[in-house]
Image (cartoon, rainbow, N blue to C red; front, side, top):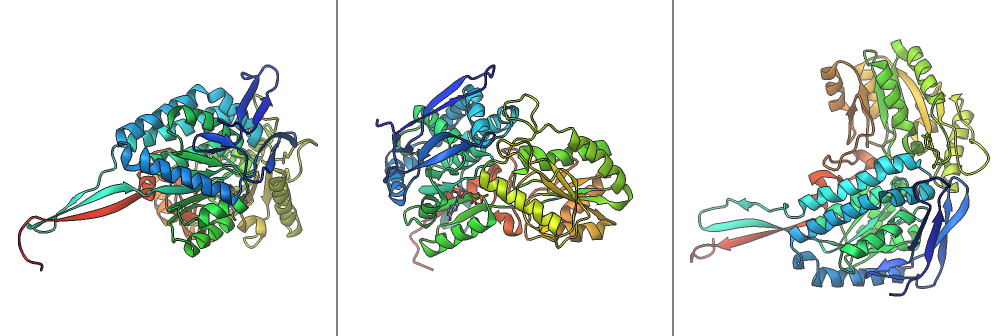
Length: 503
Ligand code: ADP
């Protein structure tokens, strides 16, 4: 096995892991290699802004090699060659390895992405393992039906894998998105070519060493690199038969276009959001305030489901704002390895600049910065948790996804007013309703154009519950049984049971 290069990360003194050393080559057919032209990408730690590792900058020909490996594995050891029971066993084994390596995986994630270690350890890694385990359970349970036609014929479905599938993941939950993509695709018997985000490839690189212990070579191929050429090569590849993408709406659109122009591969997209979080005047205010803060500032606001538009019924607006102010002021913005850090840095300089530009646009368009609005500290890409008030619906900060720790607060009067305001967006990923009147909350939930509605909570994602967007927030659903359908080809078989002539 030719090892390309090694990442060597050192963690702060006193941390549960002191060091991590692992291969960071392209992982193709179970082996590590440099990219075709030997170019690399510098990976930055967002808490310091310093380079922490280098990974290969994959090229289109590397994607070709990965597809060759995935196709060979599909035909020889996976797909119809491996029972669902065995696929499930291997997925569960990988889940166990994620759990065993949770401290180091979470440490890598925290250093690479900037999220607090405590969050990565409590959420990202265990949820990634749970997702793999959940789909391990599905691997021998995705059956077709027998369908009644008439007495002389029998018709039934076979649920088959699609073949080689391509997957492109973002940088906000790198390991979790890796697991969301791997789980259902492998459970159904597909082989994979997956691209990590250029700014956060390291947890998946580490995971390849765990994958190598469990899966036959070629079943999972990981190509690090930039969107162009690696993502574009995946989206337009003639031998990749399905593509799944999580990221921005703009790139999702280009992936769909590339799929349409090439081989019409089916596309699932999990895209942006501008999710409304609705607080009625009969809500438990303490509960609403703490979930609202969690809804926007969790993961430094870098979540597609972030509750970035808070709507408060006008009768309780002042009280809500006062309590939210206290809660937000108490949130600790700190280095990811500080044990009480809640808000980490933006994940990259690019993202820091985008968020800062949005904050500036809010100021320029006349909104009031109620809290935050500035860089935090002088090192790394930290931004203060920011609250805008006096916001008009046409402002950019009220309409565009910011993907950072920035929330806009607006008022509403009654049900019709809030339903109109909440749905006045091109997006439809998530939403929340806070009210003690559960039937009222449920009736509002029905009227919201969003793939998820949380009642009296926020950001609740479970492997068994579908997640995905209405409108320009996406196509298809991830998680739950819904994701199984994304990776299944249904074949209908008709059997003639008589000697009768055609009719
Ligand atoms: P963001 O703009 O927030 O960084 P992106 O949608 O650009 O989000 O990134 C999500 C993923 O999509 C990353 O892995 C990125 O490299 C990839 N990507 C970016 N551009 C393209 C493209 N043109 N085709 C395919 N994938 C792309």
